[in-house]
Length: 186
Image (tube, rainbow, N blue to C red; front, side):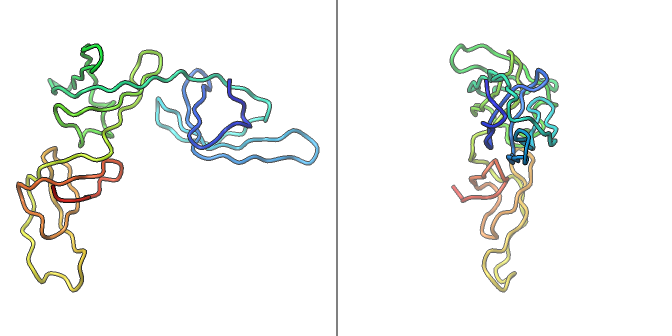
């Protein structure tokens, strides 16, 4: 059980039989009554974010979330197949659930799956991944007055990121999957 007064950023709790994540919180002590906790929370199933006020004595259940590392195998007719690296069980995931990470799906890569009651509710790619540049215009020396100039580049998975002018087609680059920002040439 977690009390509303124990809320911290990143705390997870069960509200209306669905797991929620605390994004921000504020404790308010009233003059004569009990304290209130105003929290900005995110529903981990639907992804919706909202604010709600709780009494300090309210208690919530732990959502019993489970994480598994799974390897992406292949895509077949809109279903994406993953394999549990511990049990070698295979599961198929619909495209709708993968919308946030679709541009970072590479065969044979491992991804973190977040489960709630044996149902996948979230997928997280590795923090940084290496991709091959499929298409980018040539960088022309002297295009800028200062360093740090960038150009668009289409990666092997189809997403477009900004890369420095010296990066060319066919080269491999490391990308931060949280922000979609170029890190370095590999």
